[in-house]
Length: 418
Image 1 (cartoon, rainbow, N blue to C red):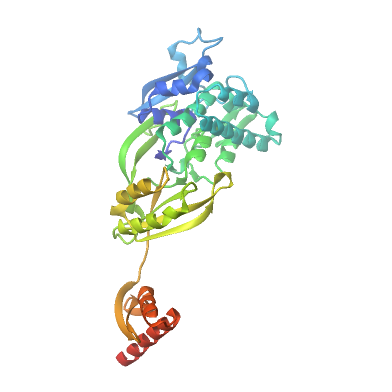
Image 2: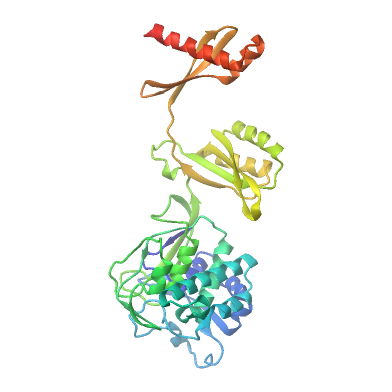
């Protein structure tokens, strides 16, 4: 999944894009559970610089529900503000927000993640104002619409089930913004804090393009930042910001697809993939046969690494290097022969020496020497272990002695050639 943030990002834009790409809005409403009893999630198609996009907004049902007619849903203000007013609705504490999230119908993992994200937000605010996390009242982000955006987005990312998320650098905008504490330059202090480690830029547009909820969601889900990865496109969605800027579509675009394997192979040759999975619940006896079958299925190399996994369990990282065109066969084999329920693959670049076999005669038989060259220069020559072992077993001589004799025979041969 690629998040394209050329016009910044806000929670409602990201959730809108994920709905636009194919997530049913009713699923989101259901996920909001009883958190959603006090609000309505409006989903509408709008135009932004001539591009159709999905725009979301939330209205609180209670006291002022009857006063709302549709014209008012456009949240436009006198601020230079781009996405939404920074100061409406009650200011909730972290405790109240956690309580609200508990009323959503997110999965247990989703609830934990949403609470942790609000905690990050509260920590950012607390650090800026020099107070404790529990005393922070989340002004901008404690409003119900922001809570709905974040809880909805947690559900949306879970619904898509895509772990490989890349985002573009974020266009943060410019100018100033009115927040509860006064007038601040864009990006607002909480946004800056949340964007630590994220590449940002500004094209000079005088408005806030990245809101705290946008910063929170992108930094939470993106694993990497940069240009769009090489992929086979499957779906795309556009989530609209509140304002329509002429000439620049005010949208977040989400692009979904299947990574193409050899995107990073610099040599232009066929790609090599590193396919791996961690396993902590399989009999160690099975690793041997799995390794042999992987080689038989075309793997270039297979190795096992001891790793520490969750709940303090020792586990094994199984890594297979394989030509890109063997990916499906290798993945099928891993799923069939091991207990893993997921594998991941990345394209890797490798350089190899040119190799050839040369036979030498030793006491008791012939040994193949593997000779490796780069640009014609011999850099390595090593006797094939299996050959040495076979002769050692037949003659009763130690393997190391057979190896040494093979190396010497190879050296003599090179001198004669010279």
